[in-house]
Structures are given as C-alpha cells and as structure tokens.
Image (cartoon, rainbow, N blue to C red; front, top):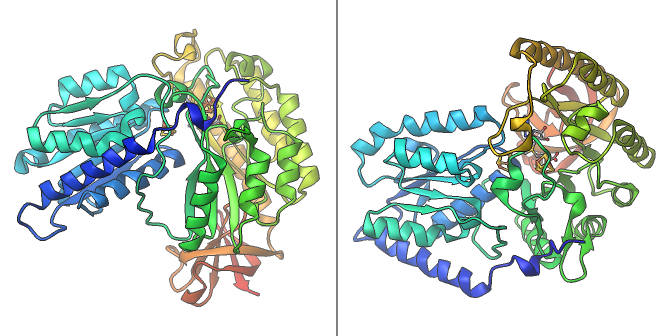
Amino acid sequence: MKDTSAGKYELSPELITVQYKYMEKVAEFIRGDLPSPEKFCYVETYGCQQNEADSETIRGMAIQMGYGICDSAQDADLIVFNTCAVREHAEQRVFGNIGALSHLKKKKPGLVIALCGCMAGEKQVVERIRKSFPYVSMVVNGNALWQLPELLFEVLVSGKKAFAVPEGDGVIAEGLPKHRDRSVKAWLPIMYGCNNFCSYCIVPYVRGRERSRRPDEVIKDAKELLANGAKDITLLGQNVNSYRGGEEGMAFPELITKVAELDGDFRLRFMTSHPKDANDELFKAMAGSDKIARHLHLPFQSGSDRILKLMNRGYSAEHYKALVASARKYMPELVVTGDVIVGFPGETEEDFMQTMALIEEVRYDALFTFIFSPRKGTKAASMTDDTPDEVKKERFARLVKRQNEISAEIHAGYVGRTLEVLVDGESESAEGKLSARTDGGRLVVFEGDNRLIGEFVKVRIEKNTTWSLVGSLV
Ligand code: SAM
Ligand code: SF4
Ligand code: F3S
C-alpha cells in the first residue's frame, strides 16, 4: 500500500510560524497610520466543498493580516478568486469575472487581485493570466496556499508579481487560521488530493497526491467546530474510503465512528465515497451511530461497463448496484445521491441506455448531472469523441427529465411521515417560515420560532412541492 499518511506531507510547525510572522507584517504594512481595519478582502469561491473549506482558510489568514471581510469585489483591496478547473464552463466564468475587474484596478491601483485554487495548477491558465491579465498580481496554486501571507507581503512591499505554482505532490498545512461564516453547518477536510486518475478528471493533476490528515487533528477540529455551535459536520475528501490517517493508518470507518462518538447533538456526513473502495465496513459504521446521516453520495458516472472501463473507475455497474443494495440492507431509510457524466468520448446510445437503466434501478433521491468536458492533460481529452453536441444535449435532457420524475415520486412519498430535521435559517421563499434540511439534504419549510434555528426538530410532512417539503412542527 502506498504511503498516503500525514507524516510524508505535513509541513513543520516552524514553517507555519513563519507564515504567522508574515501575517503580522502584512497587518503592520496595510495598517500604516490608519485605524484598522480599513482594508477589505473579498473571496470568490468556485467549485466543490474542498474549495469552500480552503476559502475559510484564505479568509482566516486575511483577517489575521488585518483585513476586514467584504462581500463585494468593488469594496475590496484584496480580491481572491478561489477557482475550479473541473469543467471548461467554470473556467470561462472566472476569466470573464477577472476581465470585468480591469476598470476597478485602473481606479484603484493599490488593489491586489489573486488567482488561487485549482486553475492555478494548470500551466496554460498560468500562461494566459501572465499574458492577458497583467493586472492580476498573484497566482497561487493549492500547493502554495499556505504561503499566501509571505507572497502577499512581497507583492505589497515590492509592487512586483508573485507567481507561486510549485509542482509536486502537495502538502498538509496544519494550524492556519480559519474564518467560518456558517455556524451550524461546517466543512472538515480529512484528506487532500487524489490518486485515482479517472480518465476525464483534472483533480489529481491540480490537487496533487492523496494525503490524509492525522486523526488527532481531525478530532481536534471537530471538537472545536462543535464547541462553536456546529450541528452538521461534513468530512471532506475526494475519496474518503481510501483515508489512511496517522502512523497506524486509521481507516475511514474507524475515523467516522470516533468523530461520531464526540459529545453533543450533531449530524455527521462525508463526501465523496468512491464505489471501488466503499464496503460493508463503511455501512456498518454508518448504521452503528445515529449521529451519522443516513445519506450516501456515491457517484457512478455511467451505467455502462465499457464506459466505466474507459473512465478508469475500477468497478462495474453490477458491483455498484450490489453496493447500494448492501448499504440499504444496513440502513433501509438511506438517501442515495450520485454524480453522472453524459457524453463521455465514444458513448453510444446503448451505453447511455445502460445509464438510464441504472438510475431506474437505484432510484436516486437526487443526481448531479454533467456533460463531459474535455480537460487538457487528461487521458479522455485525447480520446476520439465523435458524438455530436446535439446528441449529448438530448441525452442529457432525457436523463434529467427522468431523474426529476423519480425525485418527485420519492418526494411525494415523504408526505404523512415525521422527519427529524436541522433548522438552518429563515425560509427565503416562504415568508415567516423556517427552513430546515433532512438527513438527505431535502429542504423542509415549516412555521416556527426563530429560536429553533440551529436545533434538531421533528416535522410532520403535509405536502410536497417540486423543490421542497412543507410540514408542521410536531
Ligand atoms: N472525487 C469525486 C468522485 O470520484 O466521485 C468527485 C469529484 S469531481 C470534483 C465531481 C464530479 O464532477 C465528478 O463526480 C464527475 O461527475 C464530474 N466531473 C469531473 N470531471 C469532469 C469532466 N471532465 N467533465 C464532466 N464532468 C466531470
Ligand atoms: Fe476525479 Fe476520480 Fe479523483 Fe474523483 S476519484 S477526484 S472523479 S480522479
Ligand atoms: Fe473541487 Fe473544482 Fe478543484 S471540483 S477539487 S475545486 S477542480
């Protein structure tokens, strides 16, 4: 087995201390003679929960560096784009939004614009920024995010640019400050990177090798989150089932069991599980604790064994279905969701129909559906892809339509049942009502006192709309 444990990747505490010194230096520099905070940082996050979690660290460092946090680029002195590279469309949005800032930079010459995250791990993106966006002063890829204070200090003092795009396996940086703006729901990364190299996916190239945090660090973070009022914690990793933490190489089922044993009334979730590594041990651990949400997000990507092979996923459709059946045996009330890609190179109508058959059989509560997007440098990008775009779009529409029907049928089945839900705020759509989420992430709207926000309550479901369940407090 490969060494994916923390020891090999974890930065020494001394290196982190140096960054805290730079945070102080930046704070002194930007404060000047002004009362603090007079300068503001705006962070725009794209992509997955891992990026959301990284943005909490970026904001934490910014606050430590003396910046206030603002929610508009117009008001900011430091703008950070924390980007996603998973699909072409996400990248185009970032380029568009950076382009729109050229006027702001002219008006505010001291403005620092930084491109961070997964796009900063792609050579052609870094080149394009260098050539076409001269007013972007910093490009910092995921491997160098922990050095942001030092790099920013250099940019501020010298007026020069900082392009930190180190290649290599990636690191684990413990002990950096974090700023969380969501109190009830929290992200908790347990590992970084990915070793799976699914043939369509850019993540292993831009996020580096799989590396697991030590279990004691994970538990420490979980305790801190709970002490600060978190009620719903999601453990994050690209493939949590291959977590191996600490010297003993603790496996994921043990880790979730340990986190779930912590004191407090909370719900524990995780994502993402990879079907090639998920097993009964995981389902037993889930079933063994009523704090672990009865929700399994298990991407399948395709129902065709031929395509799954080309995708390098490492399982068959039969294996996938058997896994779901086993999970449901342990937890009959389990909510199952998944990811699927339509239009992978060479996908035939027959392959696609096997995907349709799989969703029919599994009956997902919800699906995240994507059209294949070729990513430079991945194996699939150079595979022959002769399916016309219109055919891919038509297949995509067919899949979404059928899944929506299945979701609606499952939704209707909740009427008359009493569910335990976590109240997460006031409803945005129904005035005077509260909004809450079920274990499986379904939106529930009901009347109640604002003091219930952050509490688990029981709600009897009375009707369903397309997007939500409506009920009353029991
Ligand atoms: N690690 C997770 C896993 O293996 O399921 C998923 C991570 S990926 C960020 C989220 C989803 O994006 C994938 O499950 C896949 O469906 C989709 N995706 C990744 N690369 C893609 C591509 N090149 N084109 C379209 N969808 C893609
Ligand atoms: Fe991408 Fe596959 Fe890794 Fe998920 S497991 S991040 S889809 S390479
Ligand atoms: Fe996540 Fe996008 Fe990076 S999905 S890991 S932010 S490429």
